[in-house]
Length: 178
Image (cartoon, rainbow, N blue to C red):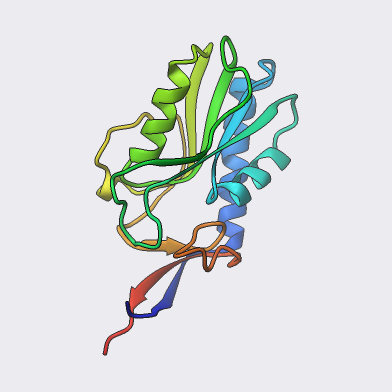
């Protein structure tokens, strides 16, 4: 495997901050009096979810689910592995799934199907990054931050083989040429 090179900043931390504030405003409008349960999909969504919650000013609860379909690869294997499920009661709750990026749609679709079986009052999705070029499963996205090109993205919580999550900007990787 060739070591990747960070080639470009796609979105700066300022652009990300502006996008998160816009999403928080939309979510506040829809959820301010509903005491929703926000479900973050780990690991990638942790930075986005933390910043999103800091921009919300109403009662809410937080839960996390950890699923994976990538491992150390740059493409989804198509197989969803659940590492941590949800322990909070879902029935009759307003639930907002928070995801860093939706590309194939497989992981978020799996989480949505699992939550839907628990009979929430409502179930919506918020994603910071939408990559429709990779979509394999059509998933409803109620709150979308940015639509991104078909590049492998890192930074702001997004990783490649558990690396690069610390970058404050969203960048993309390209393999080095021999």
